[in-house]
Length: 97
Image 1 (tube, rainbow, N blue to C red):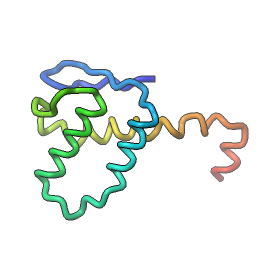
Image 2 (image 1 turned 135 degrees about the vertical axis):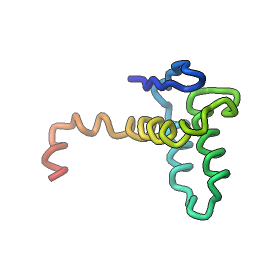
Image 3 (image 1 turned 60 degrees about the horizontal axis):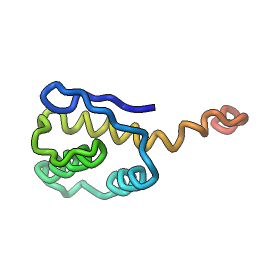
Image 4 (image 1 turned 30 degrees about the vertical axis):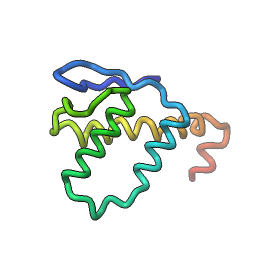
């Protein structure tokens, strides 16, 4: 499974299935306390994470209006990969309830 997003200037980019290194990198970034970060740092760091996830050389060409929603979608995909097979376990429904 891959995630396709319109990334820069209307071009579509594909985020391949993440490996453990990428999953760990996104999880560690998400776990950071960002409450004291100014918006400029938050936007730059989110854009850098997008570039890293998609294998881009730079985040400079990403539209600022796309940074937050794009990060949420891409990071959600990366983190969610870890749970996809858990839903297929025989007792997954019983354990949830």
